[in-house]
Length: 83
Image 1 (cartoon, rainbow, N blue to C red):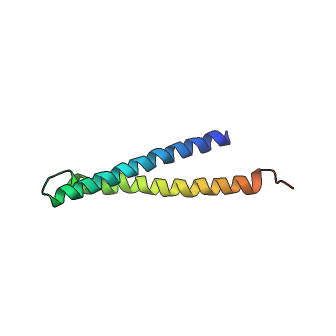
Image 2 (cartoon, rainbow, N blue to C red; image 1 turned 180 degrees about the vertical axis):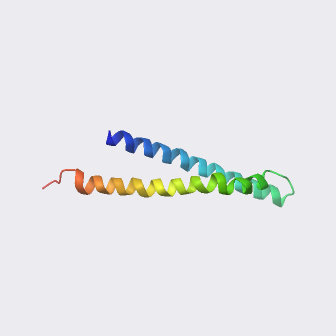
């Protein structure tokens, strides 16, 4: 059960990571478009920053910290120690 939950958390973090990479790519393309006077959705990007992108970044940070803590607890307390 524990391994399944950790696997689910890791899968969610991986999907969130690729979503954030896509967000970053969109930002770069939109900025280049803005510099060349081509509207590529920079205003939409700004509009989605607070309601969508900030929670996604927060979820990634929280999940990475939680995954590290769970891994540390598992190593420290739940695995048998080799003597």
